[in-house]
Length: 158
Image (cartoon, rainbow, N blue to C red; front, side, top):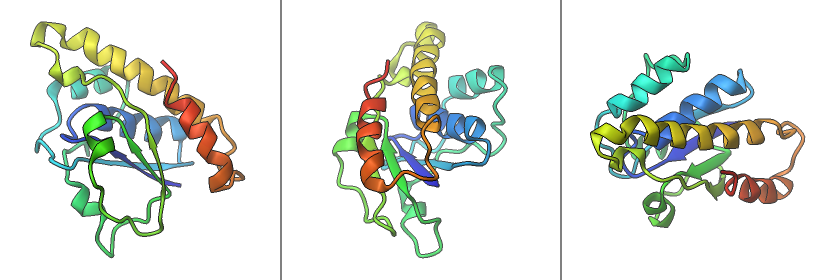
């Protein structure tokens, strides 16, 4: 299952969830992240926290969702928005007509620098709970229609 995680800037929340899904999924899913208006760099606190939690950040980069709308891009099964801005934006048409869901989280990058650590940890903890709940599902056997209510429920997990 290919998953695209979207956020406007692609520097914090989407990067965190991409890494969580790839690490916790252990090959069951392949997650990517992108932004509608990418910042061009991963927030330094995202890298600090992911590194501290044992995630490989060597390939982490801020990228545009345009990369995933090309003919040679991976076909997505699911698109997850993690910020309100991206959820409300007109998204490109993704090949394969993937499911869409919104798992909104407050933007830790909006916190002042002295508050980065608790803000990023809070976002990470919420996203980790959601990633685990998602990965606990029998993804290999659930139809798209059967998956939809689970995706909505997971988006409410705090």
